[in-house]
Structures are given as C-alpha cells and as structure tokens.
Image 1 (tube, rainbow, N blue to C red):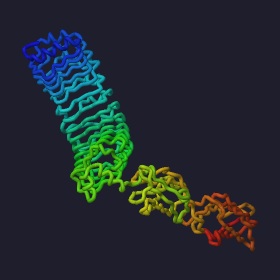
Image 2 (image 1 turned 180 degrees about the vertical axis):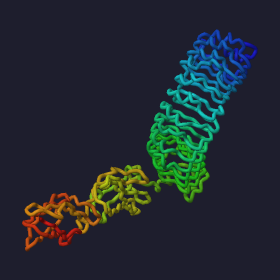
Image 3 (image 1 turned 90 degrees about the vertical axis):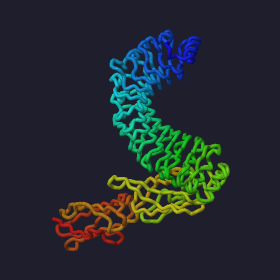
Image 4 (image 1 turned 45 degrees about the horizontal axis):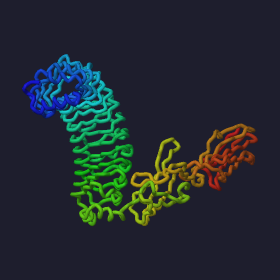
Length: 565
C-alpha cells in the first residue's frame, strides 16, 4: 500500500477482507499516497471504494485492475489529474471527483467507455476541458458546480438522460435555451451564479420537481413556471423578488417546500391554498404586509411556517386551523394589538383567539335567488350570497372580498366581461347587484379573493329590453320595384342598447300609400326571433310611400319612398 497508509486505513482494509471484500471505506484516514495499489487491487470483488477526504495527489494507473468497481469516491483530496486508465472501469456507476484541483480530464480519457456511469460529480475543481464522449454517457446526475464556468459546456446539453443537474457556484454563468433539451430533468440547482433571471425555456422541463436558485439577483419569475405541475421544492432564497402574480400557483399542487426567505416580496399571489401537500413555507425576511388566509387551509400538511421579519400587522383567522405543534415563527413583525400579545402568549392562545377572525371558505360559500340565472338589459337586479367558513358554519360577520363577473362573447366573436357589485351586509351575507346593458348568454363567475365559490361559474341569460323604434333596422332592396311584383324588406327589432331581440310579439305596423289613393295591404310576418318579414304588392307604376312604426313611433327609415315601374 505504501508508507502513506495510516493504521486506521490498514484496519479498514482488513475489515473489508473479512466482510467479503466488496466495500472499502478509507475516507478520512489521513492517506498521503496509495503506492502501488496492489493491496487494494487484490480485492477482486470490490464494488465500492471510498478514498474521500484524504491528502492524495495521484491515483495509480493500476486502478484499472478493479474491474468490478461500481462506486468510486475521491472527493476532497489534492488531485491535479486522474489516470486515463480510470476510463476503462466499465462497471463504474458512480464517480465522485469533487473538491480537488483537477483542471480537466487528460488526453486519451474516453468517457464513452464508461458505459455504466450514471452519477458524475466534478464540482469544486478547475475544469476547463470536457471530452466529447461526455455526451455519449447515460448520466442521471451531473454536478459541475464551483468550476468557475462562464457557460454550461455544450456536451452537457446533449445528455438527454439527465435527471439531476447542479451548476451552482459558477459566478456569471450563462445558461442558454439549450437547457430545454434536457426533457428528463427533475432536479436543477443553480445557486450563487449571479443570475438576474431564470434561463429561457425552463417551462418546457415538464418533469422538473426541484428548482433551487438561492443567492442570485433574480427580480422576477417567468410566466412559464406555471407549466411545471410536478414542482415539489422551490427555493428562491436570497434573491430580489418583489412579486410574482404572473405565476399561476394553482398548478403547483405537488409543492412540499416553498422557500422565499430574504427577498423583497410585499405580498404572496393567490393560489397558495392549492398546495395541499405543502409542508414548509418560509417567507421570512421579506416585506409582507399580510399573510393570505389560504395558508390556514394547508392544515393537513403544513409543518413549518416561517414569516418573521416582515411588516405584518395582523394575522388571518385561518391560521387557527393549523396544528398547534407546527413550527411557527412570526417574530419581529409590527403587529397591532391584540395580535402581538396573543403571539407572545404562545401558539395555543394565539390560535384560540384567532377563531373569530375566520372568513369564508370559497368552495363552501354559495349564491341563491332566481335572479342568478336571468335578468333583463337595463333593469337593476340582485341575488344573495352566503359566506360559509371552512368548517361549514355560516359566517356572522363580513369582510370577505367577493367579485362577480358575467363573461360572454359579443356579436363580433370577441370575449368581454360585465361586472357586478357585491355589497357586504356585515352579517355573513352579501347582495350581488347587476344592471347590464348587453344581452345574451353568460357564464357568471363569483370569486372570493380570486378563488371560485361553490357551483360557479353557472350559466345566466340577460334578455334584451323591449324594442325601441329608433334602434330597429330595416334591410332589403325596396327602393324600387315593378308593378305586380311583391316588394319585400325585413325588420330587425333592437332595444335601446342596440341588443337584437330574440323574441317576437312586437307591434310593428306597415302602411303603404301609392298614386291615385292606392293603399296595398302590407303583411308583417313575425318569425318569433326578433325578425319580421314585410311583403306588399304594388298594383301599378308610380311613387309609393312606406310608413313603418312600432307602437306608433316611426322607425328611423320611415317614411321610405319606393319607385315602381
């Protein structure tokens, strides 16, 4: 073994021999050199060799004798290179070289021969050359952090089997849209890289479940993060985030740890209540002025809530739903009385006193009243809303933030929204008022702080108001005609808001006067759909006048002159 082997190291070799010789742990044995490697090479069945945390400067070439070796850990030594012969270890699955001074792999090192390699750690070295054969590996995990890299080496982008990629501690690192090629990626760490934004195309990594970009300078999150439904751990600690309302957190239903400490966040976006697996929420050292009540809806999973050193003045009543055994930190906030004393009295007292501050739970709240489903354009209408808390109890006080919207499509096919007014009756009930001028079929969306309430959206119909003569249209080629040939036109009934009527029954009258006292009778056909077909037949040539009225009021084209030849 050579003179560098300590007594502890020799004892470990003997132990390995007596236990089958498949594993040898020489970690932290004070080894300076391995010498000829003959003693270790005799362990023909050796599969796992740990030489980490020693003082080694070289690895002898005859390491190739360990043909069955599957795991090799040489981290935290003083290596400046690795032998080319290491690339002949065809059974090697795990190779850990981090924490040395290796500037690169030597000429002749053939990665492609390491056909079984799945885990490669070359972090905290001085790597500056990357053999092309790297892209031919079927790596699952790669750690290239702490190498002073300015860009991710191109071969890395072509390892399509990668599930874990660690590129942390590379100051000024550039990550391009090529990252999207790594479609199997689940775990991505890029801490301390001086990033000011997340890499483009990150939203295409649909398998991503662990995203860690601590201690950068990221100021905003891209919309495409909403496309990552498998996210379980999100760590943005120590960045410059202010808000991220653009990210739909309702898609992050698998989230377990949401870590946002030490940013500049002034509020949390809606949707956190959908993270029903969330165990840890850390929003300490931010600028939050309030905690969303949705946090309290996570009582089945939440084990740690850290929101100290913010600007909180109150505490939502919903926190009383949380398990009293939770690790709760709300320290160093400017709470107003009585919240400060309740918090100081302990979590049990705090949660008991918070109960009267509980508000409605959206999916338990409901609306009622016939006017929910039908109204008339221009006619003030209302229906009622009952707030119900998470335990199913009707609320007896107000304070919830409900919104009502009627969403439809106009005659040009474009979506539009008409809003209602929600009045807080201060007793747990609310009145929803609306007076819409646009008629048609709608979806009614009632939300509480952005979350839909029970049985919404629901369909509703706003009927047109009664017809107004000055709004009705008359169409057709009736300015001239021939004697004995019927003259035809069509009346389109509209209300004062220009809504086309979709019902019949309007009292349209058509009177025709011709030469020599002629008065041919006009027939008005009611289609029952707001459309009226008019037909009359002139007996002889001359100038005719057609008068069209609605309940005695003339339409805007009336009287119309018709020339008959």
